[in-house]
Length: 199
Length: 198
Length: 199
Image (cartoon, rainbow over all chains, first blue to last red; front, side, top):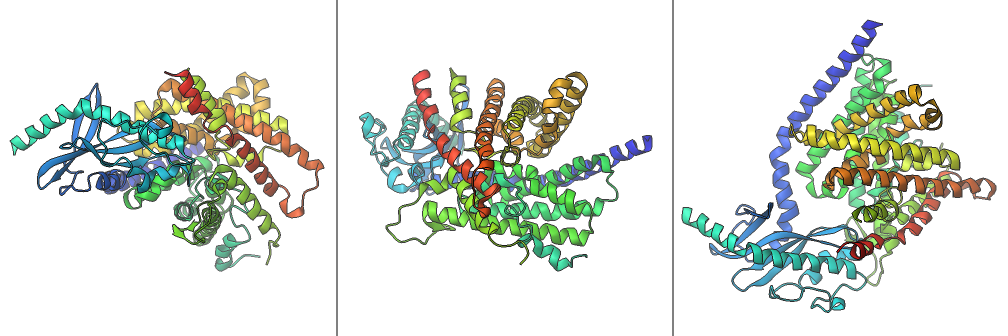
């Protein structure tokens, strides 16, 4: 009887140990690639779109800025080695859940250099059309002081027909983003100056 | 009468084709089949886990005490699931994002534990490997079939290629949960019309 | 207020069975009679809440502390399996009446992907502890509700004429599709409730 129990414990422990070792080996092997993939795949395409004139790699030149205890990742776009725009993430509630939006702002002109949808759970074929450039381009080039609301809410943005709530979510994220920008601007410029002075 | 290795492999394609003949593993079948690409990804991930867990369980069957076999099976299956999770994140990131929650849930896909208990714990390693691969590929095939139909009607494309005529209005219902249930039910009825033994 | 929105979301809008596709095996398996369906529903509510309670602690105080979040899947499933076993033994000894009504469903629950699904979901959604417990509880109620409705319809199949090919699973799936369509009508209810109640 005792022998039987002992066998159970030993076998299960052995299996679990071997599995644990196998997994930690796989984890070490894939760790760096996963980190890189997350940045490149989730943020990369949207970044390329919103900072389309950047000649540097915004992912490598990112900054962490803290505001009210929350850390924001700010991606820096440089043209000919000089800062021209920044990009960061913002969210707004859509139809199916939160919509994550990458907001690019041209610092010199105080306009949006573009927005890109990072994550959403909107209805495929309807609300999911917020990711199409025909919609996101409506934000491009607008001043940061614009009224980012859909026309139904007396704003400036044409909502996608049949997907007003999803369009609203994107507008909300943009509005929040612009507010965040006005709070972060000074800090960002200071940090960038500090960094270039160091060089 | 014992089946040949070849028959063990091919039974997964028709005789016990999951999820139609073996009505198991419905959650991934319904959830990830909005796009053909997702169905294929899910199928391959499941096949990987099924193949390796079948081999390992068959080779350890004499060592594992009967009373704790389910616990041992679950540990082995879960290990391979985590391997798949990590590898997919590292090399097939976009698809792993789309499948999301349903990759860890391969652990509780009844097909895998079902094959471990009903087949791998009683048969030789070679047979279990053939069984795992056959059932896995059969499952992949079914997922691709369902997801192609849903993608075609729901979005007018297959594997992302537009194949419908230009004025085609996507049938949004098919991309949603109700469409998943109804299309699976319809295909099941069609398959029921054909006898089990060909 | 927040929890009312959460309840509406979990029970009606994002019903775990009908909109999130979790837990479909027991949904098809134990829905032939209303009373078994009700029993299963109760068992799921109970285990789901309890399992999420434990896994939440395991995640934040064990996995995060030791920086091994990648082992989440394997640890959660083992914790859930052990928990179900313990609940079964406890009920058998101490509350035999409850054991007689719920007992037979407990072993089935370990492989119910809704349990593991909700446990993982509350982590990916970054829910607080109370939110997680509430979400699990309401999801369980949503599961029970859908299961009982479904079983009620399925009982009538016995006296209806159904074409041979559609018998059993096929017609069950199509029925589930129609119920899911009915639940689809609730979509957007939570976001509008949110905008009324909060703010």
